[in-house]
Image (cartoon, rainbow, N blue to C red; front, side):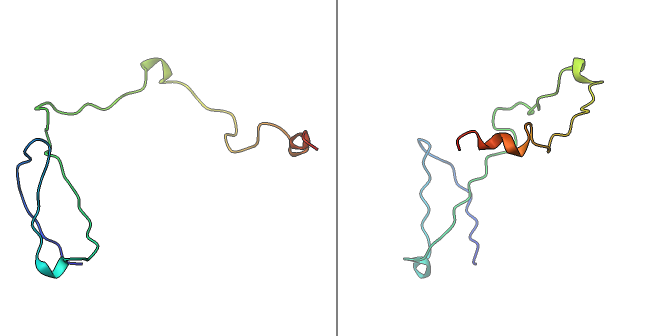
Length: 75
């Protein structure tokens, strides 16, 4: 796959890209990357509450909640 890199400025939230004639009728993939600091602020990620710091999960999260024979309620 051939990659073409174009840096441009959107006008009214739109970007027009002129492709080479060899790509006419071909399927292309368009990837738009936003600038690192689009709002001028550093992104902050959510953090869990400090109250959950010592929480321990002691249950099996993969095991079914009810026995398999209870799934036959519709029969």
